[in-house]
Structure formats: structure tokens, C-alpha cells
Length: 626
Image (cartoon, rainbow, N blue to C red):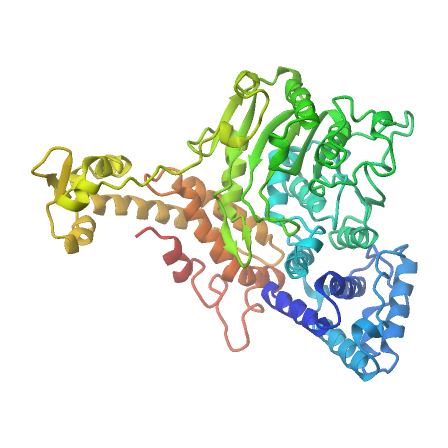
């Protein structure tokens, strides 16, 4: 039987519990991810002829299982990993954790018991049986672990992970999904664990089938090792990941000119406002001519990374970079650089994100979208203020599926939405009032209208007419409902209820206009359900579950874009929540093993039912308008 994603996640987190106490999450991630890597490649090598990695004798996970209870288990696990590393040129990548460290893993029997339990947890997983090639089971598991490691590590050690939701936005707004050739390239100069780089790659591969070449540089050796493992687990073994300081010692250069190698696409989440950015080189005499627009402040490197990325893009190149909001409005040297960049038209857009999204900091950040193609003809910058679109997730904020979709839709369509997005002309940006200040509140007022209190109404009774008029979008759909509920008060400017306050809800729901509206919305859902039920009944072994949910959800969104009053993105979110909580496990099991083999023991649903209707009552009730 293949592994359910939910079961895999709980097993992986149980393995982390075995390591708590002797180290913090920034350290035990090295142990858990290495074991995950060894188990995965061992299973794949055993089940796939010609697997891309060589698992030598004495270098497999089965060899680790044979050590359970062995008093020298730690030292012998190190030797197994060393053999696997040597056979695949992965020294310094998978052999960074010391499994014989008694300071972290305990002494004597404590170490033996801890490592035996750890190996047992991974022993229960079988990645060789997961045949749904369209689904990145290991990638999802890796992402799950990285998110939790970053949360557990605290603010100072979360720099190795960019939230996947942000990564997806960054990839989509620069059009990686429209890549035209496998010869095109993606670059991340501060790649961390590689999650951002891989999300960009997945976007291209999912949309076009092209495997774009990946290039990343990372200053921290341990984090670079994570990135290298991540690339292999995601079937990107040819990705070039280099360990060094990108600003002082950029690795990727043109072999003919010695200048920076340029790329088709770039994504980056550099360290915010780093103070030591110029260590190791003289920016005033930069060999790569990155600072022609000006030299960033000595103790703030945000623009140093931005200028490096601009210099690393081809003449038609596109990039997206996460930076703190200060880059939009700070003065001094940064204002001079910002002015020059804006004048040249290389900033296509700015997306303001919610605060507290990132693990390394709680401050709000923005995505700067760069596009050199047709920069000279660019007449404006498209701005989005998405700072209020998120959900609380523990002690962090998180973008929902609907938030991601709305940002990308608005950006790609250049859709102007009140209090959310607009195209701002370069003329407005450069006028005397703004003087190239890009701070989003100057151009988008995202504040909600103030809730005005009418003291006279509170004291003497009556509802101010302005409060009733403010619901105009409802009265356009239910004009007669307004007359049913309200009548003029005995003084001008006020309204009073026609029905007792306890009967308002019944009066609305029982009104013919509301009944007609409810029927029209229900018909939209029924139309979507009818069109997509065959897709659900047609789920087959070897199918693509991610492609399925994308088809279902996109069709649902398109269907409800025609509904008045309902926010189609809210309806879309209901389906995505149900997919995450319940449906994806079921679909994944079916595409892995088929309808009859997937159900739990004791159940025998016929194909197309899986023990419940393909459009389950729970799913239907969760998104069906009432």
C-alpha cells in the first residue's frame, strides 16, 4: 500500500520527537532530512531499474535497519551514509550530521535506543510503492518538515525556508509557466534550502513540461547541503548549487567575458537589511559593474542584492525578489538607486504582503517584480496591496489558496480592484509630490471605511439612511427586500424597520427575491457538479491528482465568477480546504493503487464510489450556497 500524505507527515514529525531535548530544530533537521533522503533513494533504487543514484552495498537504509539495537549504531550509520555519499559524489551534502554525537543523541544506551527508534519510524515507510508520478510526495513531505523546522527554530534560524505560498506567487507573476524551451534558466543567488528555486522549476515543468536548468548560490554550507538534497529528491540532480558569498564572490560567470552569467528568470529571498553585505570586496570598484546606479548604504544590503539580480538577468529576463518595505521609500543612497531603476522601467510590479509571513522576521515584506523586456516602453508600475489577505496559522500568518490566486489573477490581468490593486503611471510616481517614493499607501488606500456612529440615532431611535444606502450592492439584487424590511422614519434622514427585529432573518430568507437568488446560485453549483462528476468517477490508477484538483478548482472559480454577491475566491477556498483536509489522501491512494485496493480493510466500494459519493455530502455542503 502507498503512504498517505497525512500518515507520512505524522510519521516524520514523530521522528523529530525522538530527537528533541538534545538539540533544537535547526540541528535535528539535519538528522531527519538525511534519513528521509537515504530511505527514499534506497526504496527507489530497489524498485526502479536504472535509478539515477547508485545505492552501494553497505550504503542502503536496509543496512541501517540491521543495526537496530547495535551498541555501535551511531558510528556504523555514519559509515553507511559515507558509502552512499562517496558513490554519488555527495560528500559534504548528506554526511553533514554526526550520528555518533553523544552530546546531541545521548550516551550509551540512550543513543542506541534513540537511533533504533528513529530508524524504526522510517522503516515503516515505503516510497517504492508510490507510483503517482504526477505528485511530488517527497517534495510535499520535505516542504512540511521545512515549514515546521522553521517554526520550531525561531526567528533567528528560519532563513533556510521561504513559505511555499510566497514562492508560488513569485514564480507565477514572472511568467515561468510560459517558458518556451528546456534551455532556459532559473537563478537564485541566495537559494537557502532551494525551496523557492524548486517552486519556480515546478511551475515551468507543470505548465510546459520543460525542465529548466537551475542555478543557485548559498553562503551557509549546511543550508547548501539541504538544497543539494532537495534538488535530488525533486528529480533535479543536474541543478548547480554553489556555496559561497554571492555578493563578494559570485560563482556563475560568462566563460568568455568573465562578467556575470545572465539568466532568463531569477527568484530570490535575500537576508533582509544585512549589515555586512560589502565584506570581502570593494563595491566602488566592483569587477562586475553592478553598482552603476549607486552604492547601497554600508549597513543595509537590500539594494545590493536587487542590483545583483538585475545584472544577472538577460536583456529579456524576468525576476522577482522579496525585500522589506523600506526599499520602497527610504531616502539617501537608496532613493538615488530607486529613482534610476524606476526611470529605466525595469520594475513591472510591486506586491505588498501581510506581516509575519516569514520565519526570519515578523516585519511585512514586498515582492519586487522585475522585467527587462520592453522596459524602455513601460509607462507604469502595477501595484497590489495584499497586506490584509491571510489566515492566522499558529504564531505566524499564512496566505490561503484564494489569496495566492487573487494576487496572481490581479497581476497577470492587470486588474484594478478598489483598495487592492491599480496601475500607477510613471508620471504619477515621478511627480513632485511622490518623487519616486514607491510606498504602497501613497497609491492604494486599503483602509476600510470608518464605521461612523450616529449619536442621534442611538438616543432617539431610527437607522441612518446612509447605513442602509451603504448596502447598495445587496439592494441591486434584492430591491423589493429593502421595501419589505424598511420604511421611512418620522424624521428626515432616518429609516425604521417594518418587521420585528426577531423576524428580519425569516423575512429575508422567505422573500421571493432571495429564493430566486438562492436557486440561481444552487444551479451554478449543480452545473459545476454535473460537469466534474465524470472527472471524479474517471480517476484511474496512474492518474495525476494535482492536475485533477487544479481542473476542479479552476472550473469552480470560473463558474462562480458569474454569481452576484458571492466572492468566487471564497467558494474556491472551500474546495481547496476540503481537498487538503480529506480528499487528497483518498485521490492519491486511488491513483497509486486503484479503486479496489485503496480503501481501508473491510470496505469494498465499487469503482467510482470509494465508500462515498465522488462528490461527497461533506464536500457538497461545504461549498454549496445556502
